[in-house]
Length: 300
Image (cartoon, rainbow, N blue to C red):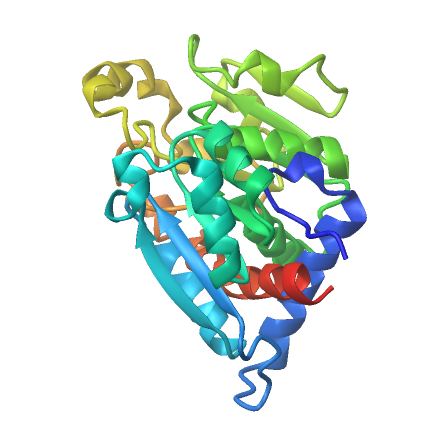
């Protein structure tokens, strides 16, 4: 059987995306079953170049709950730091591990590992995409709204890797996505592509939020952008998700943030801690989604 990777939302069909989401919901709804160990004897490798709380812990716990084991690798502690060929590392790790999740800077690097690896490779975050985050976000939307269809999802903030993966999801699943980004911070043209009738880009946060069922944001300054912080604080000053902005959305809107949050920058504490916020459920759902994804890649 040909191995399957998860590198971007774009690479999977709508049915494949929603099957993993539904499996994650089933795992959550079924409760903890200590006797269920479908991945016993399997080993997940985590190769991370970037700091992580939720992604690392949720992957490790997901594999543990499924009965498998995990090995954490900092790329700088491997022979890659001494210029070993990526091809050689990928092929050797394939002899030790059953699946490899990578959190790094370059999307091309992840794709090159996947090219040479004989095991499934998961993109656990790059500067260009964050597909695992969007799968767990879609799980949260379905959990709270019953479906992702016929919804308006508003994005307020940077046109970053999370926004890029939301664009892929909207293309695949057909929900309305309106992204409000400051001038100069729009998603990359190659990700936006030729456009789609259900995806719109604006510089007005109110346009993205008005009538939205789901409201999403992320930090203004991502990892690796610290030198731009002061300029970004000025450029994004109109893009805070606060109580006044949320009031423009539907009364039953849910507010999402993939965390970590910079309180009183991209999101007000009153919103983050408020009744419309689902950020803790969103974070918890990463564990169930990652378990469903691992089981899908290793057992399907």
